[in-house]
Image 1: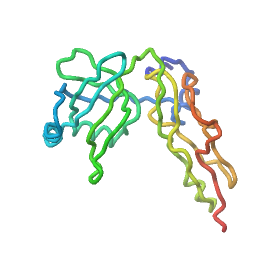
Image 2: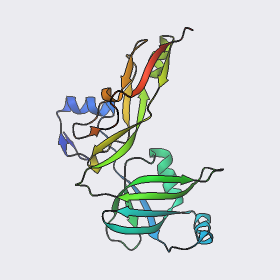
Image 3: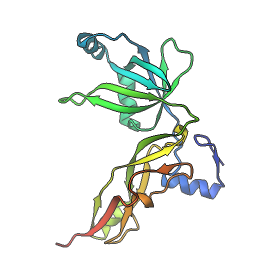
Image 4: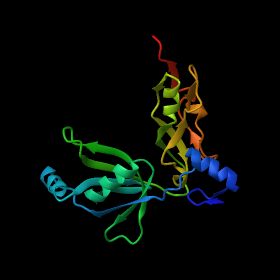
Length: 212
């Protein structure tokens, strides 16, 4: 079976196991839509936001930083459903080809927490990059059935790979852990083409006794 985002081939049993664990991501890049904008003052930026547009900037790949405005409703829907990590296809009005981008920074309003501004990094699909991916804990209910307590540590893992190999999440299955067991960054499973960064001994999850 061909995993299209990565180009790697697996037999059906291997593919099913990796997909079930979240090692292989089948999600395609979500599409963000926007327009180029002028560099103007705060009043202009507030006017954009009132019109459901989010001021943003794109940089990287040797290009000059490009100010843009993204469709707010589309962006919020995508972020609510898929999060802000992973690869995005950026379609700009007047451009014939989309840019492949990563979200590098999300700025939010301090009170209502609405998105105020985005920094986007344009990437090449043939050059490795370093990014952070959320860790998703699964199987916690099995720990609870033991009468134990699950203590969660790291919530993200740093990965280096081609943009098309970046997983949406890295799953951490704690269902078979007993009291005293732990999972570290080194234990997390990723594709062979993905290199994990950070301290491999960083704790992701540990099972503790509920007794005091």
